[in-house]
Image (cartoon, rainbow, N blue to C red; front, side):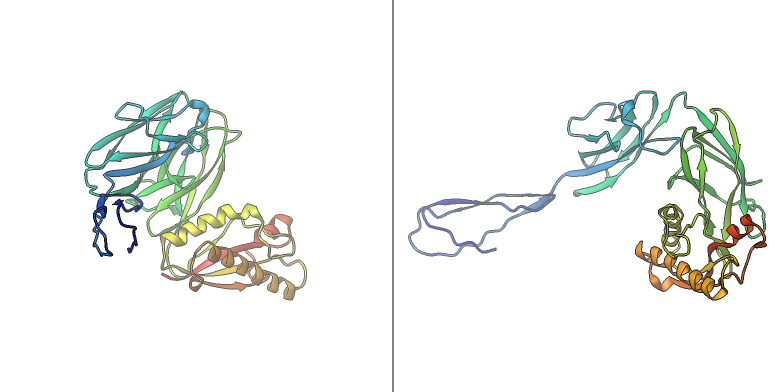
Length: 347
């Protein structure tokens, strides 16, 4: 930097750099009569803190803890004045000196705290750390989901020895139990809401399922199987819950849940390349159906590209009514044949 200063004055220089502390350099020209040049060195030191932030979650539903339960974050069992907490999002933020270990916990009405250790001893400069916190609801009206994890290629339960996790609303479920000998699972969730649930098995396409427990009875047991497909070239899978405007290639908003789950899949497996296929029933002319199915397949690919997936990973094709899954003689059959799928072309 360069500064031209009047004589007969004393000046203090500091540097303003985000997340750093500047030493002060003094330039005293009170006794000078003529123009001179001085060199000033400003030393910066990183802030001796780590910014820790996250969200306080219900450990069963994996939703942010509702503000009506008055959640608060404690550090080493105490409230910290400098901690900022947004009750509308159950989100917190606090700066803490590095070089120490801390115990974080959530205190809320009708919840049991699940403390977690936050280790800041490895840090030597200002950093940001995301640490989500969990608390277990007391006397929750729980529903038990149970069933098998099925390999869609074989139609049989998943082979023994596989490591399986379960994600609820994109977060790993803490109260999920899996028996790798017979592919059976148990998952407890609060009644009264709906969930997006996805099994997580390495090197498989893990199909998201929308599970509606809004009308489920507390303490009830609900059977539900989940499905995974091995990642192999040539394997095809239907993209369920994809909806278009009638006779058009415009995606309806209710399609976004499934499409966003597909975005997560492509992000997890960055080398997968696919052919997106569009299919119709046999109503109307085949030329119109083929064109419409092509446009719909392209609309799905375009949505995924718009979410950041590389366009090089997609091809799209419309098959019209040439590849029905079931008979078109019934209304239900025609609905099943109107679908979008993808086939793995490269890994």
